[in-house]
Amino acid sequence: MTTNRGRKDVIRDRMAGTGESYNVAARNLKAMKDMGATREAVLTQRWRPADSLDVPCPCGGTCEPGERCARCHAPHRHVARYPGSTTEVETWVDRYECLGCPASYTLTVVLPGRPWGVAETVVQGGAAEPVVRARVFPGVAHPLLRQEEPYGD
Ligand SMILES: [Zn+2]
Ligand SMILES: [Zn+2]
Image 1 (tube, protein in one colour):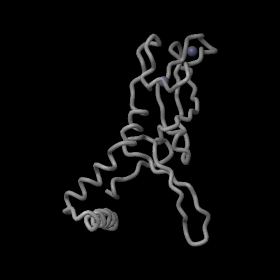
Image 2 (cartoon, rainbow, N blue to C red):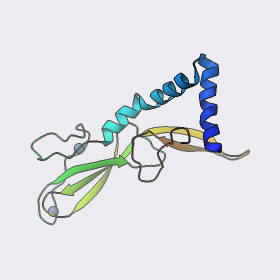
Image 3 (spheres, helix red, strand yellow):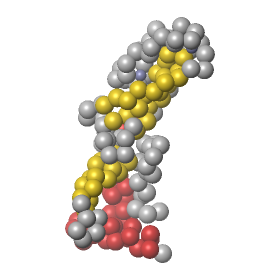
Image 4 (cartoon, rainbow, N blue to C red):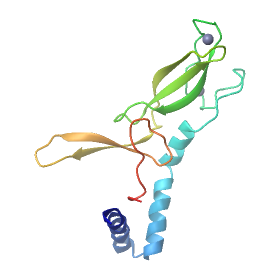
């Protein structure tokens, strides 16, 4: 299976570089992927909407206050956040739902220092133009991109 061979190659590369055993190298690679920026990104996305507008929004105060509904005049509440671009890794979309009726809307926000993934410039083919491709951090749900597979599993 090609996917298995790809994963083993990555682990063998690390073994060659660090002198670690296969199992240790595999475990360390996984740990590296799970740390740091990944944790931040998951925290940026995973929170439960506030029960009341009297408390600060659990998203971390990085959203705009919800607008008042044009239909029923109740306020909107911030209910969800997800990546809002396939290449701009600091662009997110905030979703708001009205507290009084089924109305909802979304707002695009840029959160500097809170990326949902890593943008890489890759050259595809020989003479092709470099393109920006984003990798989504593990644990982040992207509506348009697939999450990076753990080394092809
Ligand atoms: Zn919020
Ligand atoms: Zn409403």
